[in-house]
Length: 479
Image (cartoon, rainbow, N blue to C red):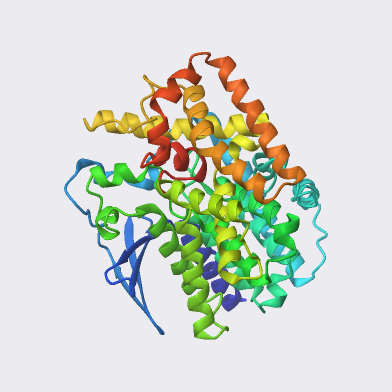
């Protein structure tokens, strides 16, 4: 009994430590070696764990008692990205937090028993099973374009990314086909979800879950469903789930002008996208999800995952769109060709990343408010630090309506028009229909927004104004 008690206490402590886990900061000095720094908060101490990955080698070094180092000299660098968008909680929210924790614990016990095949007779699970049952019913319609990710996130107690991605991997038969360890899959998804900053109004795990669900809808389109291999589908789902991993809630221009070390590390090029990719690779290696595969296959997955995530860089929007348009004009896309299939996956992920304006109004409006809140918060920080305010981030010069109309006009409409040429299906027409109705709805809220956006937001939305597309949709200005 004594040993069992001690073991239970140790298990609880380990789970508690991992519950405090936060996102990764990557350091890559040669594009072959990546240093991933994990910050684990334990009482009043800071534990810094460094995972150094080199080809065929993994070494772990830990130092205890050191405060996190500050890089650079700009005052903003003293701000923790993890608390950037935090809001003080009122005293009245404490009971709600306790209820959520209770539900979370109940669900943990329930899922553990189900995985072991053990019956659950405790009547305390009845209420929680009601939530799980509703979530399960929603997953039966996970391919619906009207899927309400916000409701699903509430029903899963904030675990929408884990539940939805695990369900899709199972539904496509990928876990069995690639002989993936279910425990490793579960741990990988949990760590991915935890590495999103849920304090961010927009670039958080719910956005990642929404993009993953949209990607699933695209993968089911006839042209893709008939051509994509299981490997393509696996890459597409993993890229969608991790495409904004560890997003700080600010865009690339902000990182550049504050001399952030990530901007220097990636030489001011696709800074956030590179970071998301490196962070995803770090978790793949940390969980050893593909350790049973030949080394060349694992490296191929990592490289192609990076290619997909890097395609979401909004500053390269015209590059990808022009290439896509040329393929369609010349009618030379051959989905029997692996490189062509990969390119179509890149375009599908780009569409999934910025598909919010193409959702039904009730969902689209919520995303619009969230992304604009994140933009305006960045603008407030820039004002405080006396920096030039990034386009779309000045709450005094922009409104939600003006930001959305400009974004829809110069970023979303051109992309989805070409996607509809490629895949002229009922879903494509539905998305274009919602896009038109949503744009009209925003126009009625701000009659002059349409004209002003055409004058001033064309360039920002297309070029380096990641805020316009990335922050508005993807989950990161320059994610």
